Amino acid sequence: MITLTADNRAEAGDIDTRLSKAFNLGAGMLVRATEELKLKKIVVVGLGVSGAASARFAIKCGATVVVTDSRPASEVPVSEELIGLGAEFVPDTVAESMLVGADMVVASPGVPRSAPILKAAKERGTEIVSDIELASRYIDVPIIAVAGTNGKSTVVTLLGAILMAAGKSLFIGGNIGTPVTEYFNLDTRPDLCLLEVSSFQLEHIDTFAPAVAVMLNITEDHLERYADFDDYAATKLGIFDKQGADCLAVVNAGDLKIASILTVRGTGFVGHPPDAPRVVPYTTTGTIGDGLYIRESGIVYAGAEAGEGEVYSTEKCSLKGLHNIENMMAAIAVARLLHIDKEIIDEVLYRFKGLSHRMETVRTLGGVTYIDDSKGTNVGALKMALKGIDSPVILIAGGVDKGGDYSVLLPLVKEKVERMILIGESKHKMERALGNVTDVIEAETMEEAVKVAYESAEDGMVVLLCPAGASFDMFKSYAERGERFSSSVMALEVDQESADEEEPSASGEGWDLGTKDKEK
Image (spheres, helix red, strand yellow):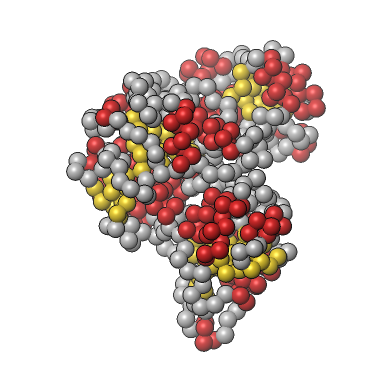
């Protein structure tokens, strides 16, 4: 557990004033970037959505831009556009030659640190940055950055809805869909920049110091890309490294990995040296004197801004489950630190319907509830999903294995899962790990899995799709996987007696921020 000192319990003060001190709010959005990047040679590696956006930004700033990708130019949709703007496309087979005279390499999130060109750049001493690092050097409003293994998109969307309801203008981007360098295409300057940040984007940061950094949780994920779990966790926790005393750190104090590593690293969360951020913790276990915790009446915020404390009822909220309680805690903490009125927060919490493919109820049919959690792409997500369900579960799982340890699920699977229907590349590994505590059936398609689940489920059960793996073995994205599950469920037939009991799926007006989510 993170230990807090008296220094952490700062007086409320004017947080907006504290934040503004950490940023040059008077600078033009492109002036300083152009001054620093003009005529420099910048190499952009990887031409996905964020890489292409980084290249456009560098070109706009007057840099000499060279781009490369593992695909030939003819297979890269944006290559013709970038070449037309003045960039040079170089095949990755000869990409190292482009490092001659390069001032900076921008690594797209999908390019691992082990890529030959990044290794060569490191050996040459060429600066390597992510799009988050590059853009943050020139963004001239406070940045709120949300990181963690699970829940990032939900928290960013919920927090964005709260801030907009309070009249704040926002740029929302990062891993949630809009590349961060698109900030510099805005016609007007927003009040805040709200970013979802992945571990991939945190691999190449040096000066990134968000005014507010949020760490939701750290569980095993992407271990095919990292040396081990500690390497993955340390990469995520780099979000706090350059924060100063004018910054804020909102952390899940109940996450053992977060607490243990921050304590060892000595980054100011224990002892609170003068140059460390103010810590605002939250937890679903125990109580906290300067942060958020839960009791029967709801979420309690006991921060300095709350006086004697505030209670946020979750009884009528659409977001359900312990993991969503944690997500709401994180959003409440940031909103109150920015002096958003409690009444506004309460209203948005009540109206917020959650995001697609995240514990989304598809329908209740014949007394069986079908839930789409296709975004649950790792072991930690499946663990939280099962914790949040009290009914017996028919589980549909499997996908591209991310290196997580399925054995940690044994107690929950034994307790809650009546039958496990496995699909995808990881099905054999999951069966070896979990098959001795529950019944296992393998399926070749989502349609077959849903049919078997329908035939297996009894009144009062839940059929849960939570793959604990990526989607790319069978689908284009987690969204397509979830849609295939939902369409298969909606196509199910039931006898008339049971049909009379059917309830509509969860629906209603939500908060549409116009964002696109992508699989981590």
